[in-house]
Amino acid sequence: MTIYLTGFMGCGKSSTGRRVARALGYTFADTDCLVEETAGKSIARIFAEEGETVFRQLETEALAAIPQEGNTVVATGGGLPCSERNLSLMRQRGRIVYLASSQERLVHILLACRRDRRPRIAGLDEAGIREYVRTTLAQRESYYAQADRTVICDGMDSRHIADEIIAYVRALEELR
Image (cartoon, rainbow, N blue to C red; front, side):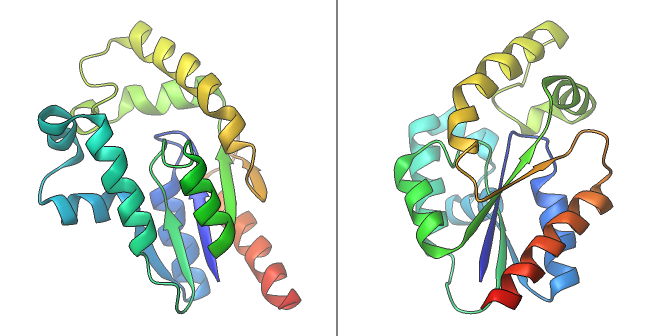
């Protein structure tokens, strides 16, 4: 079984995904890491040197290349599900879990992170990050809402978020 974690940048897909995979004995994959390995450079450099279009193509290729044998938890990039092709591929191959976070929580997290590693917010001040989160989340919400399961992350720590996903996956396993 493959579980795809989706959600806005900073919502905890990678850290939660690792925790869930470890608890379930699943393999863990991160599409951002796969893109960087394939390209031989950071996402920030891909954006700067080749642009978002090339990055999105590499992201789609990384998603398609994830092996389907065995059990895997996949942390996706924040914009990855905003493509019908990617959504369709994830639906065919597994279950999608959306880690939903409020704009305020996302802004708080993004203000505290290393922005130079996130090309879409590099160089933005607090007002710029707030505007970016507001507009981009509004654009992506309809894609995120197509998940099989939504986990509301506000007010929950990463352990509780992971526990909710683990319970969901175990329930799915019992149905198989």
